[in-house]
Length: 377
Image (cartoon, rainbow, N blue to C red; front, side):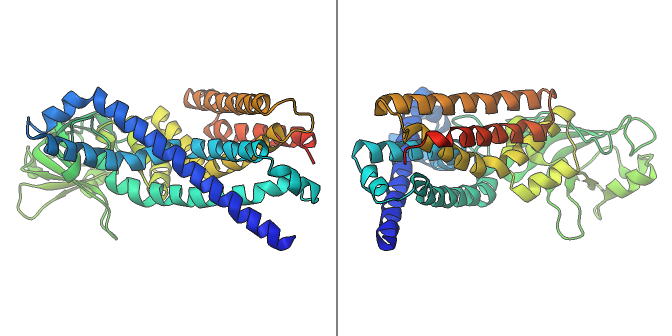
């Protein structure tokens, strides 16, 4: 029985992973086809009317980057869908009855599925922590743009100093701000209103004891004319050539464009640093905290969904498989609605970010325990 159990576990795990791979390939293919035809004009403009092969190469590179984004976006949903499909096929093909007749507990089915959840979430974690942060600059622009194209700048206030950072254009690939303006009026850095202007400003990450900040090239007015406070002399550092300065700030280049979603491409350590030392508004800070908690709860939500699906599909008083699947998907859909509603309340400040993320998980866990006696044994 032990050998049979291990063999069946491998069989169920392989079917689950195969089902997930099939669903993801179909979803990505459908997205690429629909999105590609919808934005075909933008791709043609990006290649400046060159050959069809050049346009297809550009599109292929674009969707190669977006594969990582789509995997992160729909991966958790496909995990639940794959688990439901595997359980439904087990019942449809009559593979479950011999196990139950041999005395194997119904919830024993959850073991290979949970192993599959862990494996896929390990891939999701690697994608989130390693791949997405490296290719984030290729995912922030619109269709037909790449990381070297200039983007519109969204003005950002450094909440720690009151400094306002803006510019004409931003080039994500080189982290370069063109026509940079750093307004110091009303900040903690200067005693009189002043705006630091530079032809270009390049963002540099923290490196050891060196803080992060912007290197302003050919700044005006000259550094000697600035009436700096003690904090200002620490945060605005002149360079050896006499025309450049380095402005210490944690407002990164990714916060100056599409900042409503760019934080989702950060690695978890970087996101935690940004949460601990906020530089943006209250609403954005709340969204970042919620997203951080969401990263920790994603595998737990999928495991909870499996324990919900088992008693809904393998029911003691089942009328038909189609009805059971409909009920299961309906309950999971309601749970998804609860999750989205709580996130909406959290972003609106009506509940705390922590409660908005963890409350649906507790509700789903209680529901799974409540309906567990209905499972067929």
